[in-house]
Image (cartoon, rainbow, N blue to C red; front, side, top):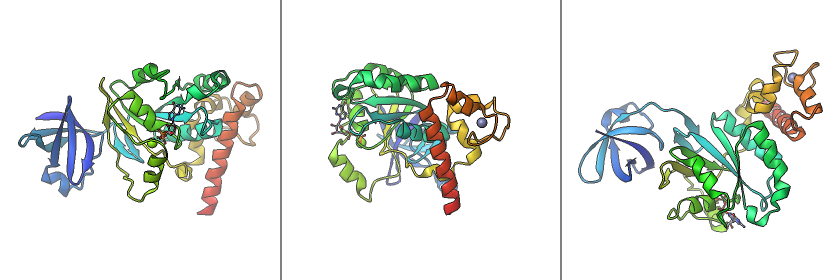
Length: 291
Ligand SMILES: Nc1nc2c(ncn2[C@@H]2O[C@H](COP(=O)(O)OP(=O)(O)O)[C@@H](O)[C@H]2O)c(=O)[nH]1
Ligand SMILES: [Mg+2]
Ligand SMILES: [Zn+2]
């Protein structure tokens, strides 16, 4: 039996990669009866069934599950923003970070298009997120600047690229791995709006080891399913300060003796982070009333 990773699922075949080789595998009948949904990213054992063909005999336990897109065993997400066009802003960054934390993914920030931006003006933003604990990469898909550092972060892991449309996710992946030929720019947006966009992603192999997944982005309307009490935990800076609040149920809004508000006043938590927290909390509350 051979071990491999499912890199693509297409019309009842699972494409399993072992080393540099991809084998088209079918699923052993008993899995179909169990209605087991095998996903891209799953590790499997398979037996050979002819040249370039195989049968999946065993499915290994999953380390993680990302629901949109459906990918198993994702290790981290690279949240990609453009320095300009569309301009990066803390409100949007914080929303993507909440979704990453909520999905249980390690998150890193990547600021692209630094070739057409004033990088010194971006330094405070990078500093802010590094202080919260997120690695920040300043890159340009166009000039290749900063790409080696980013590449180092992708080695031997499954990484999902997410972020707003137009940030340059597909361009970055094309620059990281020549030969991928992902569609970029206006054309990709037109395709993306079509109704046949797949919910199922494909793992794209990196030559040095590891896989990347290009996504059109998380849906930003999913806050409704986050509970109010858990929200502070998705802001690591807020969660760290919350230990000092008088009430263990403190949501850091109007409660007395709130260590979070104190930390904002004293500048230990960035005002923009706290504002983002209040905004998302408000949306969670509004969504609850609405439905
Ligand atoms: N100047 C500049 N433009 C870029 C860079 N990366 C991507 N772009 C442009 O930004 C647009 C959107 O890129 P795309 O990769 O499709 O973004 P995606 O929607 O995040 O996948 C395209 O017109 C790219 O040519 C970069 O590093 N510098
Ligand atoms: Mg794209
Ligand atoms: Zn508090």
